[in-house]
Length: 120
Figure 1 (cartoon, helix red, strand yellow):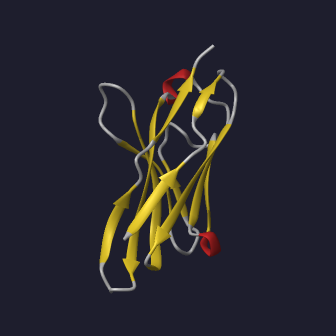
Figure 2: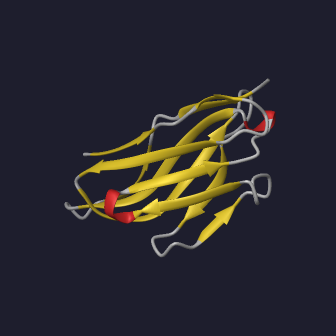
């Protein structure tokens, strides 16, 4: 069994910052790409940021220069540092990762999400 658990969400004022960790646990042999998605009410889930196992990153245009994705491979954890937050960043943020288990099964795993609200 593999689990992804996000944390760090909350209410923040515009211009503020939050850091979202997502920890993977279970029968993990290796983790390939790790991603952050978000979904605002009435909207489709969108890809926010990606980091490969080698550390290459990619961002949605809407968050470039404000968000930073990073990972700690020793801890099987991915982080999303969010700065200069705007009300339009309000959403549920989901962690996603492509994981190979010790049973040699590879699949995409999702966390349950953490709510981020940006409001004055």
